[in-house]
Image 1 (cartoon, rainbow, N blue to C red):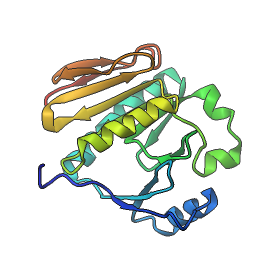
Image 2: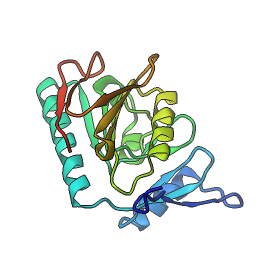
Image 3: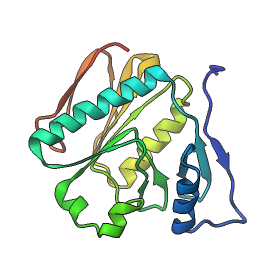
Length: 194
């Protein structure tokens, strides 16, 4: 195991059950920390990313956001957004997109807090400290929640894993060109070697 790879700090809350409102308040009262919550109720405290990962993440959000501004098909979200998935997990992908009709069907209160919706599309970018197996489990969770297309970008191994509903995971070596397929019509992303 790489000594630089770490899992998020996971707190087992077997005897304490945080309601959705309590979890929201915990996040609001500790904005300097990034939290996620598993379907089993475990609280995960995520470590911040370094400069290289932060820059790459920003570039991905910019590319997705520019495509979305041109098409006006939906809404783009950053890694600061937590989504309540149908299985009870609260997750924050590095970048996400939701089609317009699905997002606008939520109430203003649902949109203001942690939206109870699985995005149509997500990107996870593996940082130098991320455990690959943990990220793969998260990708499977996204797919089980109804995410239609997901990309796990792995600079450490110069690969990207493509998750698409009803299909086996496709692994490509970098550099490669990714397509948004039917989920993000006309969106493509050129990934060079990281």
